[in-house]
Length: 168
Image (cartoon, rainbow, N blue to C red; front, side, top):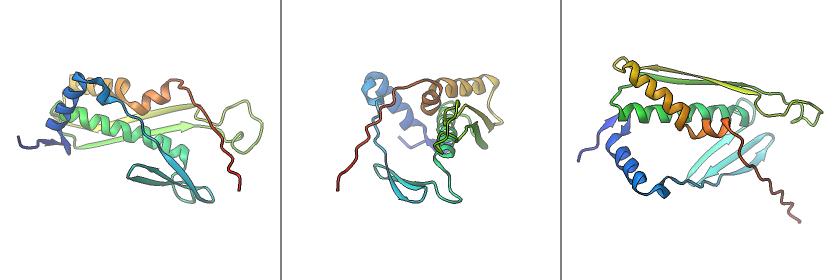
């Protein structure tokens, strides 16, 4: 069977994987490990398997901006996949995320406000002239229900810190 690409997404491959997950839900489990190494100043190199990103430093995305970027990129991916499955051609897709946070505690100062985002808002702008109102509603529902990053940000999850001091 020839590969059918819509919006750069292999629709047949995606549908086949979805059916495989329906038959064996363990195929959907993911357990990534990401390692960040200090490069000096406020820069770090982040690795996960074969992927590498540099975060921080002058003129670069810092970790908080990257978190917003992860939300936006996750929903771009999610919308492109679901639009492709629905047969919708996307002409343009932009997700803009913004948030507000206060860095007093980050700087070691007292504050009643935590150092994380106080709120996050994001806007999806899609140009898909052939999409029906029903299809667009399905894409919105996919963002609200299926975004791994959105879900992670929206609910409280356990966070465990192990602080290992290496002795010379």
